[in-house]
Image 1: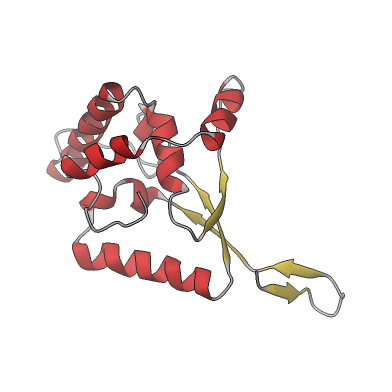
Image 2: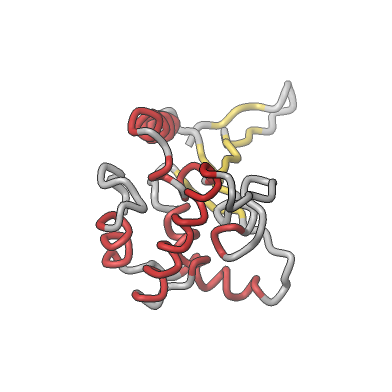
Length: 161
């Protein structure tokens, strides 16, 4: 891990990027070049010793059933927004088939890239804290992610699940 001194204090802190996995969770909705650019960028950060703390893995709650996506209320009548609703419906179906909660799937995918060393989880429900901790500590089966790829929800070229 790379460390940087805080201006003449003698205190060294790790180089950290606090990022979002909004793009990662909706991986299939991006064009192939953009997806590969993101994976290369994150891999390059790891090679440079920069730690990534991943956040927003639930995409504002949308991926676990909430109304907001990227801090806005999507409209099912908008063709672009309809894509994310269709993606989420397929995602929920695969989660149900594999007995994986949507939150657990999001957490596991958000931590899948080896450059991600930690995850920041936010909830407005204190009762979800214990569940979230359990989901961080337990791995989702590879069969779930295979089904996600087979159904086109995660790109087949994403190598970390």
